[in-house]
Image (cartoon, rainbow, N blue to C red; front, side, top):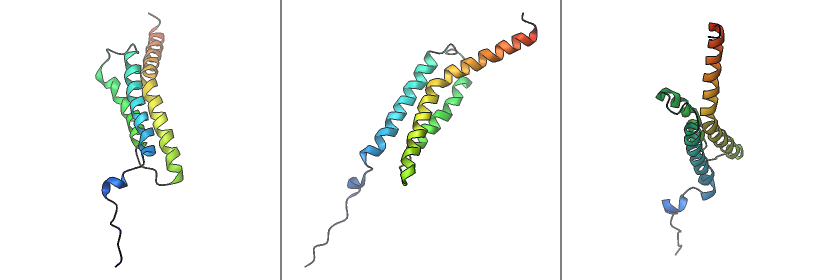
Length: 113
């Protein structure tokens, strides 16, 4: 009479909690950073197309959710999530700077008024 062990149920095979904790924190940080950066920018009442480039930080943070399968994949997820959160925080201010610089250059070409 050999007792065979039953296979582990699917709930026991959940991902390790240490894996999903960092991408979840990056997701929260990117969301809060994007909202705070956009709300503190003077382009707050700009058109909706100014919010379109937030797709890039969102994609970077989403890429950090891939489960690590190799030793270097964990570091890749940390870098992608960190860069995505920082880009979400800084995007509105960079966009404001670029728009002001373009306006200043165009004003200069026009003859200064």
